[in-house]
Image (cartoon, rainbow, N blue to C red):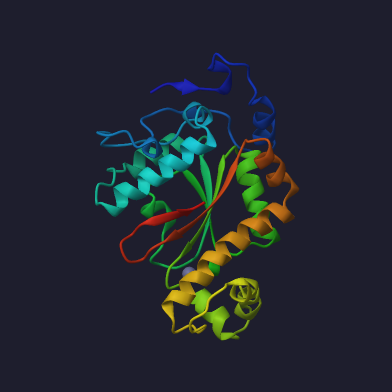
Length: 252
Ligand SMILES: [Zn+2]
């Protein structure tokens, strides 16, 4: 175990501004190293938390690959043996997550588990139907622009009840307004078969449209994230988790 700060790296300290922001937000600049779960090295039995150096040297594209590899381990039953207590200890004084995931609240689609990620590997925002609003976009901005995450992964899933509710025009308290956010995806989905919530194929087609429209909304509503994406510093990626089979399908 050893301490690391950004200034121990041989490259110029381009994390300085981020460090100032972190300090302003009360996020410690120090982290402890260890074998990071997120890196997914074969044979790592007790993986610890991602360090700043490990996170910072990965490109957005490499991080997407790590997410894909994590899901592959989950899908095939070869998950890493997470030492959550070690990850907790290693990340208590600082966190350097590689990605932020916006996914549904569905109990069957826990993002960190299905991507075989550990404590402090990813920020996670969950809301029924993985929609975006100002609060969620603000959370994504914090994750990327302040805390240094390099991938925004929007993850829908098959057989989503929120999508079904939007198709049916369901109304219930505050849920009504949330489902209204999914309505544009229902309208925009080209589908020649039965356009009902009973048709799973249509439900899944709407879920896919909803992911793509959510990404579009994030780009349109967040000048911060759009600029980071244009500079190549982050990637916005869509995906669908298949409840049957366990695959996270990454959308182009
Ligand atoms: Zn759902």
